[in-house]
Amino acid sequence: KQWYQRRVAITAGEAGIRFLAVQHEQNAAHMADGYARISGKHGVCTAQNGPGITNFVTGIAAAYWAHSPVVVMSPEAATLTKGHGGFQEVDQLPLFEPITKYQGHVNNPLRMAEITNNAFDIAMSERGPTQINVPRDFFYHEGMYQIPAPSVIEKGAGGPKSILAAVELLKHAKNPVILAGGGITMAGAEDEVSELAALLSAPIAVTYLHNDAMPADDPFYAGSLGYQGSQAAMYSLRDADLVIALGTRLSPFGTLPQYGEPYYPTGAKVIQVEADGRRIGTSKKVDVGICGDVKLAAQEMIDAIKANDGPIASDENKAERLEKFATLKAEWKAKLDNITHEDVEACTNRIRPRQALRALEEGLVPGSIVATDIGNICSVSNSYLKFNHKGPSMLAAMTFGNCGYSLPAAMGAKVAAPHRNCVAYVGDGAWGMQLNEIMTCIREKIPTTAVVFNNGQWGAEKKNQVIWFGDRYVGSQLDNPWSYAEIARSMAAEGITCTHVDQVTDALKQATKNQEEGKTTVIEVMVTKELGDPFRRDAMKLPVRHLEKYKGTVQTTESESGQPTDL
Image (cartoon, rainbow, N blue to C red):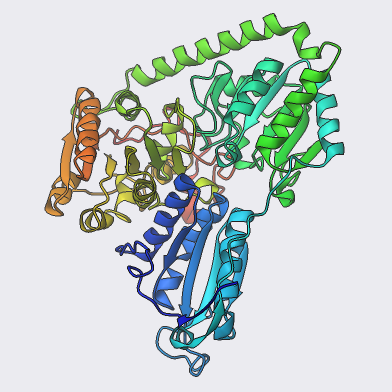
């Protein structure tokens, strides 16, 4: 055992810690999230007590639903003044209670090392944010401390009975489909999932916003579910008699009906492998739940199938299923190409959003990391983002769905993987919440690329007003008389404006070269006001007007065109 006597307050540099000062605390939390998800290590953020810590809440909520091991170090009002309503005082623990896996309040300075160690260990073992709450006066304490070593909790494949029950379902399934979630990249289970898919001839659909869960060049890769996802994935899943959900909590939002029809197979058997036992069977009916490491669980199932003496049911119709799967993929590719390039009445001096997304897809270099914001165009990118390499490569605010996520997450990713090309996709509305971090990119030497879709509107909200509210636009129009590329240049970054689709791929290639040279770039893509499908059909419907003065606004049908009147 080693014992140390030292001041609790030490400088980051002396401790071998890189300290990055940002423009807003929410962005610090998103950076820590992006760093943790790409590096597989802890991301740590700290701020001033009170207003600095309250600004963390949104970012930590996003990290919670992304299962990111982010540690929040929150100083609070000193013990002698707490409760007096002093400067920058707020009760901080309740703010984070529902969005952390552990909260450690240092009630005695001699417990500092113990509680800090708990926070770091639990953040990793339970995959989620933790909080260390420290009264300010305790930072100046001296004492004898034992510095514990990190505790690594080894997880197994799951209960033997559950594994055997799952194998029985696998042997008798005639049309199995694998649903791969974010846990695949966390566990490094891509090879095992690929082998399991090949044994069963099972298509692999990836869960919403986890387009990186499996390499897209895997022969059984079907694409992403969720908003504007792959119809090949959806239709494969729709016809399944067994869903093998690996490393996913089966979020209800990610399986909502798309393209006007439901696709989740309510009559299918379901195997769910998930490291967090509390998430098994909570949103979808599950026939076999396995609480364990998805990499080990998949290997156990592979070994059991290989050891099986008799044939498995999915072999009987293998050729027919593979032919159908190939047809579904070809049909979806043709349909996506068609909707990407179809003519839409729009201003001719701007770029159609889908064409911009396709051009960006073509410009991304292998190994790239993409962070997407929330919003209409960014969400439509789900149709186009594919990654042929293993490992975490796609970042998003997940089901928390907050604006302002993409650039700081991409910055955190760049800190974690300086050798990789890191790109943020963001609309002009959400860009206003994070463009200040371009200054951080310059100051802290974090070369990153931001693609800003400039269409002068809050697209996701405006789409609702188009469909259900008779094109009465309230709070969704953005008058942008400035150039975001020019603003970037004023911050000593590079700025590129694209007004024609032929410029977009070259702009991203130039930004990639800039990144290699240590430069941050903002690509401003001037897009039309065309909008994709409404994001929340499950939560919206035509309004009913009861007051006479509002009878003139009654809508009896949804918008026929589905597009803004100022297209």
